[in-house]
Image (cartoon, rainbow, N blue to C red; front, side, top):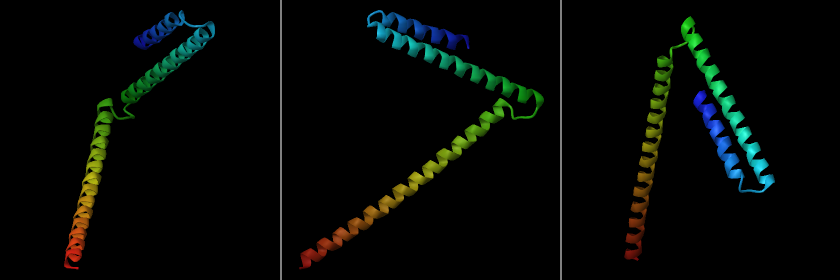
Length: 117
């Protein structure tokens, strides 16, 4: 959280330094954006900290899966999604291959008919 706060302060400082070269209205707009961004970053950090504390509390009470188990579940789900995507793409390629083959046969037959006429 200290790193996030430091990053937010750095963004604000850079914005203020860059603002020295602009009009007062631009400076105010940029300063407002920087403060808003810093507040948002601090809010995100607080939320992530709260999530981490909640996860640790669940682990300590034995009510929830451990972090390792959660990660393992997510990795399994990701693997299943990749497998499904691969299967879908293989089916798509196979279907397109059959369509190209059928089209080639039709073209060949059409040319043969044209030559015969």
